[in-house]
Image (cartoon, one colour):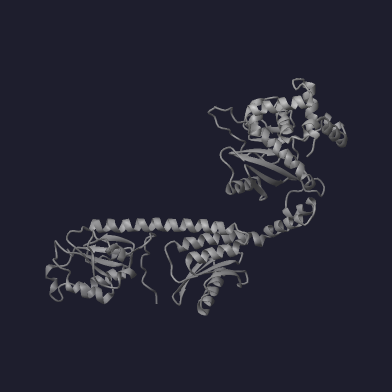
Length: 543
């Protein structure tokens, strides 16, 4: 038998009729009907129509002064109270409020009897209370309920997100969800078996019904399904299309915002199970374990994915990045990694490091022009920020970088990019990216790349060059800050201000350190030949 279609209630948090009756300023009194604590209303509507059905959405407190009821309604058969109340119930009305005066001095007895017969709450509205005042009180209570609901949802979202970041994310999310809903949360696998569960154990009937509901959503287009069994509210959420994972929830009651909270948990579990199913999470975990147990970087690199390099060697870029304003957080760091095309992100202190796979035959020279210090930057003015005090903001290049040039500039970030290297050279590339980022910040550029081109320094065997560098720089080798300041100062052509910006120190500190270097080295740093020799030495000095 087809049921009569009843309009759905508005998507607003309902309020208890008891809360409305407790308002002393209204003076409302319930005459008949079920207990006010069991009645919820979704709004207030005034109508003097003899048939209010067409004007109700469902869930309203219908207010009337009985204008449509003749004064002689006290006589039997003069007005069809039973039909009137039946239509209100059929429309989904939650309660009826009858205003005493100016039409009727008391609530008609026939109306009281009809409401009692149909189980419709009947409320007497005293003469001093206006219908608009009742409606306003209802909306005030609904606004408070909505605010309370939003606070509860926000707190639940924060708790679920924190649970998802724990070492055991799936059980933690289920525990937090079960606690919030005061029920049971279950994760079902593709075969329908329970993978993990948390919360109070339900009865056998409820447990079987929840498992059946989970199987239902995996075999139908709908991603959610609900049911009620033995007084327990059941809900099932499919975690992504075609994956087979399902979140099942069983709660003794359904509170305001419960569906939203469960949906947030479903999204988090969808991400967690999606990574598990794709294997990327397991592969990265395996790579980490192997590194900790002594495996070489080149052995674990294939587990991380990445581009194809020259021959069978995979090459990678190391990117150092800092936001133009504020400090990086986990969300912005992840977003940066996604923009660069890599999930391998490390957000530590004020710098975000990203390991980005290089495309086949990636070259560092395409589309860029070299700088004297061994760094490079994008062509044109798009990658250069205006000097301090200028009104025009920086406009980094949009989209990807030139073909083969590696990671592109990203809006709101300063980036330093290493040369593409094999996994065995990752530490060296990390240092390259750090120096490139320092120069990017000093020159107010959106992106600076480490140069990869032959030069005079390549004519000296690396071992001999390093030995000479250590001997030449031995007087300042015991103070890393001096060597680093000298390197930055030389790379920025002796600029005190830019060096201070690159090192995040005061310009007077830079002057003092450079003077100390000159004294310890016994060198005239104004001599270009001395500067050149020191620069070559610093470039070959490792560690």
